Image (cartoon, rainbow, N blue to C red):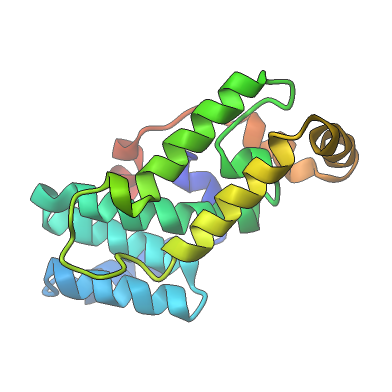
Length: 180
């Protein structure tokens, strides 16, 4: 998973603290609804923080919160890093196609409705359809050798943010729990 410290670097720690305090007495299901509302209003940062809080409040249903978190993270990564490798959590441009296939299948499997436990919600997250579109767009470019070569040339020349993303060390899901 991409480090939240990187994705949420613009979020004020005081704002995070206030949000956490406002959700202290809120149950996990309501936190999910609030996270979805934040996402609808294009506040992906607060959606990520709020769904994380829901996961902490109800760890027995952590698989559900991960669906939301993954969808939000794909959107945030696409906005922040602005490249298809980051969307698939690939840190090096020169990876073999097998790594792209593996990462695509992994990310898609985390969102695909056929591969998840039932959540009791018809569409688990409003972010899910867009996240699937972003994954498929990444796949479309990175799985085609001609498109990928052109994209790689453009990326190396234009996108300094990818260098920042690629230089980060790997964090686990637990690191985001520690911050929030």
